[in-house]
Length: 341
Ligand code: DAH
Image (cartoon, rainbow, N blue to C red):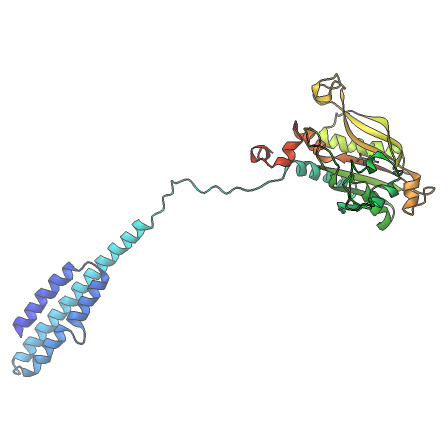
């Protein structure tokens, strides 16, 4: 029995030393120390020993077991450490690698210009309105005092949905004036940005779809002086305190008197250059005092109330603001262009 114990001790020590993994080590523990293991098998033979031999063998068996246990324990610690080290090596992060670049979007230059405009008018107590792009000719023309036979009503200029020319893509944001007058209590101060459509060929300054911002004020005692003061304040905020403006007489069916507002050319300071086509001035918007008939058609008494209105092209405002030379750039969504803003 003593030989068997010694042999077991030697064999197990060698096996444990050679174990390459924690799994292998566990099967060695079962093999040597388990209930059906080799040490248990040897101890079962104790009964056959003489009373003198029993304590001596018992002591030897205990020390073999203790050695086995501590060898297993030591090897387990060693293998555990090795496994951890390998795991760390496998999962190592190279903090010097470049990170993943996440693209974030930003506002389109035209919407930057629109937000500036909205800010200016909200600051002056205006409400921002949104309205339909598919509009009734009644709102786009009739109630804006555009006479039958007006060239803008022509099929060659306007996108109609029906042969009676009743439903159309709005050709201006001005129908929002009518919608506001019909639904809002007086006094009214609104701006209404949105898309408009005309049958124009695409070129550097034209597009069949573009954007306008309509503005309108109606109250008692509103005069042309309010129009000029408000629009001058807007221009100074948009293009700088020292921007010069001028108002030229013009004609629109829905305003009387009507005017166009120009800003002095920022490039040449009014002398004349290619940017202003030699004029010294750049046309900015159309405006005027709301025609009494327009007020009347929407149920507002022109003897008591008066108002002014304007319409400004948003693309051109942005082009001037950011010095963009070609209108098509605004719609092409070329990232090389858009990321410049
Ligand atoms: N609707 C006009 C256009 O598309 C612009 C305009 C002119 C709007 C005068 C107005 C205005 O409100 O009073 O050319």
